[in-house]
Amino acid sequence: MSRPAGNGRQGAAGKGGAKAAAGKGNAKAAARKKAPAERKQAPAGGQQFTRQNKESRPQRPAQKQERLQQAAQPPAQPPEGVVCGRNAVLELLKSGQAVNRVLLAEGNEPAFSAAVFKLCQERGVPCRKLPKQQLTRLAGPEHHGIVACAAAMEYASLESLLAAAEAAGEPPFLVMLDGVEDPQNLGAVIRSALVAGCHGLIIPRHRAAALNATVLRASAGAAAHLPVARVANLNQALAMLQEAGCWAVAADMDGEPMWQTDLRGPLVLVLGSEGAGVSPLLKRNCDRVAAIPMRSGLGSLNVSAAAAVLLYEALRQRMADGG
Image (cartoon, rainbow, N blue to C red; front, side, top):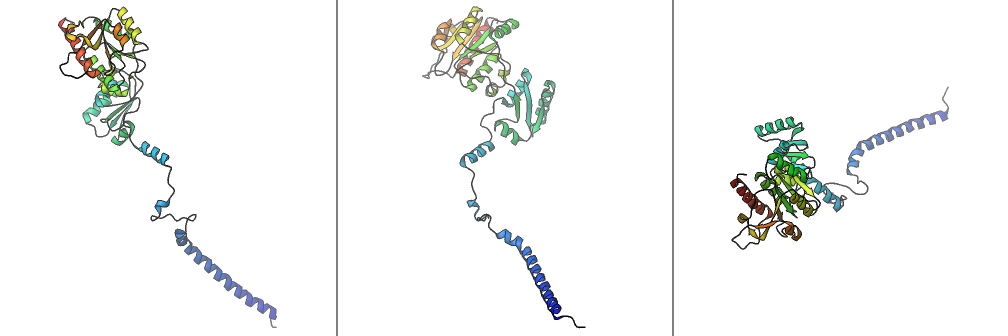
């Protein structure tokens, strides 16, 4: 029997359809193979970002870029509570002040590192080594290979300064600073006062430098050993010390030569800033005024230099008197 003509036409059509489908399948496969290469060259959102047109990429806002640059730069000065420098950190550890941790830069001398680790172990202070770059990012470039993260320094009371002199069996020997705002000067005065044998230092609460890491470093660690009292009113504090038997001597150019001034016995040496000097009321409340003779035409010495000269004149008189 012969097959119906219609079936034959359908069969022919079926074969043609199969060939067409196969052709379409091959075309799709070829397109898929070509797609990755085409996608590499296709623009993204109408803009093709390549090395040639990198300048056309959207830029960060100028303020945000500036903040990022500032964050990447190390601080010019150590932040509050960060103490740098070998002497400053070692004296801080020896003083008994609260220290949260100590960081040593890799590459320090083995003997120095061992001494720091031993001191930290005795105090129970965590200590670890870090790359030098990390210390620089934390404290700035002048860390000298060691950084301490310390708690805020504590102030003493006027009564405790007098008690320290009594415990030492010596007449009180104190320094009062009026309006000294530079922490470097404050640190230098503290260092001179400590080595001259002072029992403490008094500063005002306002318009004056406060105890901080910069002062500690400027004093080479002396600020961790010399008690410092911070008072609301210098005149009231001076009156209290005078009632306790102290004599107050102000440093000023219109005073008598310092070697003609009696600086023995219970003494409060009062110094002002280089520009303004001792304030008029505080100067009037002092018992005497002493001057540092100068042969040149300069108006005055820096307060830290003047303090050192007067402190050692006082020490000379006390040692000559057997004190």
